[in-house]
Structures are given as C-alpha cells and as structure tokens.
Length: 438
Image (cartoon, rainbow, N blue to C red):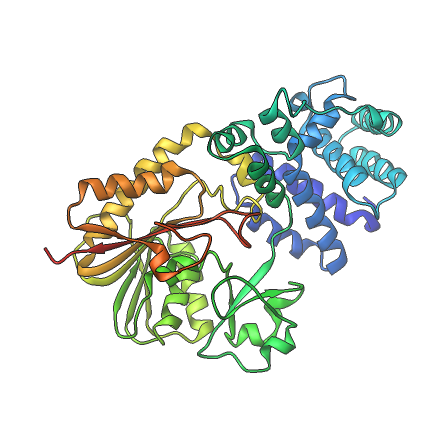
C-alpha cells in the first residue's frame, strides 16, 4: 500500500484480525496506535474501525442491495473493505465519494486479487448511482427490524428492549449507543493539583464530585499529571457502585472481581487511603493493571490477590463490592463490538454465575456489613432478578434502597440503573445489601 493510505490498510488488517481472533478490541486498538505513529493516521484508522463495527448491520443491509453475493459469503478482505467503503461514503463528509471508492479498490488489489478489486469497484460505483433507492424495514409494520437495521443492533436485543420500554425510549437508547463515548476522568484527591482542571481544559460531568470530561484524549497518558497519579480514567456511572457502597476510612473492604481496578482505587481514595482494600481477581495479568494503577496513584491501602470469586469465603470484611462479569449491554457505546459478541442464549449462564458470585461475596461480609452488587448490564436477568432471588433465599440479607442515599436522582429507586441516552454516561446497575447481625 502507498504510505499515504497506511491508516486504511491498518484498519483493514485490524478488522480481519478481530474476526478471526478472540483478542479484545481495546487490545487490538492499542496495537494499531503502535503501528501508526502519526496521530492523524491513528485517529482516522480508529474512526474507520469503530465506525465499521458500530454500523455493521446497516452497512451490510446497504451492501446487500448492490452485491450479487451474500455479504457473509465474501472473503474477510472483501467484506471489511466494502464495509469501510460504504462507511466513508455515508458517514464521513470529509472523504470524497470518489476517494472512498478508489482507496477501497486499491486496498482490494493489495490484500486480495483482481477479482475482489473488480467486485469492490462494481458494488461501490453501483451504490453511488443508486443510493437513493436504499430502503429500510418499515417502522410501522416491523418496528424491531427497522430499529435493528437502522441503528445497527442485533434484533434479539432490540426485541427484548421493546418488550420492556416503548419505541421512542428504545430509539433514544440505540442512538446513544452509536455516539462516540466521552473520555472521563476521576481526580485523585490525594495527589491532584489545583491547576489540573485548567491545564487539561476539563468540564465537570456526572452526578458525583471530582469527575470531568476530557475534550481530547490525545497524549493524555503521556502527560506529567497522569504519570504523577493525579487522575484515573473512569466513567462517572461506573463510579456509582462504590459511591453506593460508601466505604469509610479504616475499614476492611473486598473488591471481588477487581481488575482493571478503577473501582478499587476509587474506594481507596474515598477511604483516604486508610484501612485495607483487597483487590481480588482470577486473572493475574489483569491484576497487574490494578497494581500499576495503585502505584501510580500513590495508594498504599490496596493489596491484590489472585482468587476465583466463586470459591467459598469467610466473614472478615466490613464492606464487599461484587462488580461481576456480565453481558455489558450498558456499555455498547464504549465497546461497540459487544453487540455482536453476545446472544440471548448466553444470559441464563451469565445469570447463574452472577448469582454464585453474589452468594460467595456475601460469605465474606461481616454481620452488620454492607455489600454492593453491580454490573454494566441493562438486562433484568442479570440485575434485579439476581438480587431478588438472592434476597428471597437469604434471611439475613436486606435491600437498602438507593434513593435513600441518592434522593431526587432519576436513576436511583430501589436500585441504581443508568441508561445511555436517558442518563449521561454509561449504563450501570447497583444494589446495596445489608447483612443483619442475626
């Protein structure tokens, strides 16, 4: 490929790697940055990758009208080059249509063969001539199909949400999931300097103090303020679980599924770094990130332990955070590939593991202590139903309403539940449970 098109080439390679590997998208994107030292190329490549993933279903719908072969029967090279070409034509105003077609054809020549290049050229030029003929499912006759295609979400998920909320509510949620997520940070009160807000041009965000939106993430992690531990990247809604737990200085706290450690470090600063926080996780590699963040932030109260959260425990902690693995349907905006990696059939197994993790976490809690169960899911099976089933079978467990601690907040009732598009920030769920002395 010519050097000027290194961004498109790198994006194509990443999309093909994502399809055949199980590596997380974030990890692949970090590798992308390493391959493209020019910041402008890196930003453009990221935009192509994230846009192609985010709008995949709608891109395929458009392509189906102009391609004689089913999209899923094409080679990965052809599929991803065509998706990127359509994305540039319809979503990127700064890319001329001719340039989108030409560069797509050149990509096909480089990565595949003349036959693929001819196919890409024919499909995209046909699309340019007949783009006014594109039709989507009718929203009146097929509301789920329309929303699924137009907003590029799996139909099973749209159908679930339409059973729970009305059409307009779901449409707002879907649209929010397709907007780039803000980069938010939490200031470290133990280290942050007064002029940091002005230095980084920060804007307050969320419902908790100390959270700010960063206008640009470029070079953020090479700034002296980051290296000195003055802040930690964290969405304000992800922080609501620790705020609901309300840890106090001098207490002993267990963070059961801790990595990568945003909530553990938040708890440590809330405790003024006095007491003990055990950050446990089954993954040694992911726990190394917890240690790195704790060291950078200057936190001494945090200890990491490699431990399976489903193992039995002993009642030795004043507070326990059970932030459990989930379907992640509340953070699709931040992780667009999540929508294509999940299926409705996975929810029962997830819920069963979440119930076990909650039961084990509760075993670690002293009588009189407080546990918070949290997820980044919007699904009732993983949230309310897990908590309600646990409460029904555990006489010593009592729910403490979230709106007592957060009065007049639209996302707090019995539980905390934030929903993208309806509340600023990511989707999150949290429930506060008290363990009685008897």
